Amino acid sequence: MTYDRPNRRLAIPGQLATIRFMSPHRAAEGVDILVIEDDPTIGRNLHAGLLASGYHAHWSRTGESGLTQARLAAPDVVLLDLGLPDTDGVEVARALRGEHPNLLIIILTARADDIDIVVGLDAGADDYLVKPVTLTVLLARLRAQLRRQPAVPAGSDPIRLGDLVLDVAARRCLLAGREVDLRPKEFDLLTALARRPDTAVTREDLMAEVWDENWFGSTKTLDVTMAALRRRLADESAGSTPLETPTISTLRGHGYRLETPPDGKSTMLS
Image (cartoon, rainbow, N blue to C red; front, top):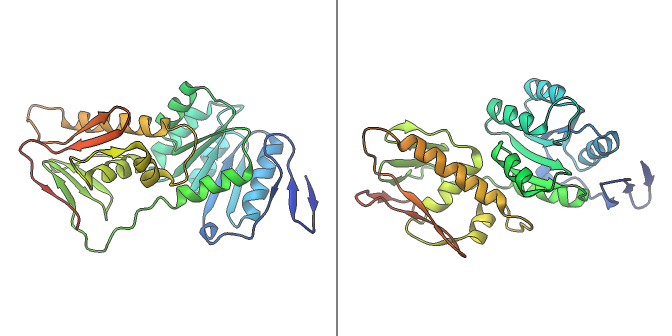
């Protein structure tokens, strides 16, 4: 790793391209990031780049040490490679999501096949980046993910759609009074649809609202999150007592629509 001090350029060999460091962004203040990456060059330079961008960063080279570090330090974000020496990164993602439901997990890997992306997102990752990727792009995606906390007016009433209640301020989903355990992106996606029931919402609008207004590349993250959301709602609705629950319709070539239950009353946020 070599520095050209007048321009503060970091020459990163291999998969992270040369970038120019900017002054630390305010969004980085107080954000703790754990890098789980076994490649010494990539790990070292990711760690250095995050520190130079104002983040608090730690680096673990194995899945087990990464899980231990996450338990000790409770990071806000994990950047996770899938090709780890001791365990598959997908299993690490599942363990992290199970132990830290609100943790932001970004997979950073050389695995580019669609099935790998689907499996990684279904394991609980919030984003999936394929190497090689510039540090500039990684930092931009990181900032975008950290911005994905929707502003909720104080005292806002919950959204009610039949037996489904979304308390956006408390980030709770209730179905006939029972709490439904949704992952952060599943909750945000359901909220985006529930705020405008019986209305067609484009894939582009959902990507912008739930993920990033400047999103580019594959939208499989939306498809995987939608499939998981549907499964969770269906599982919770199953039982001997019929429930008035909304359904999510796919609008081919357009997006999705949340259908109000036939006999269900809806109350929306003002």
